[in-house]
Length: 90
Image (cartoon, rainbow, N blue to C red; front, side):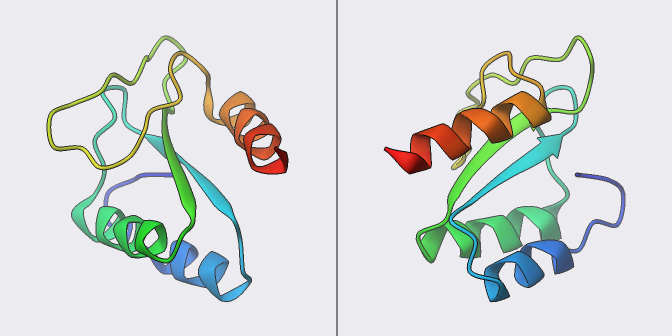
């Protein structure tokens, strides 16, 4: 979950556990704290699938120029996680 002060520690912990994918619950427009984004970029470079979803009930993340993470469309984070699990199982 993105929040003020998110430093990416959770991403580093997940990487240490060997995860294949991470769904990040971003703000309504899909932006992330810089340190969290840096940790997610590192995870993506390591081959981890990263998806952005909105933590807002009515939020929808759109593709922004220069944003390196695919969005989850209109899916909330919990449903985006299930979609990513299914994608990774293929």
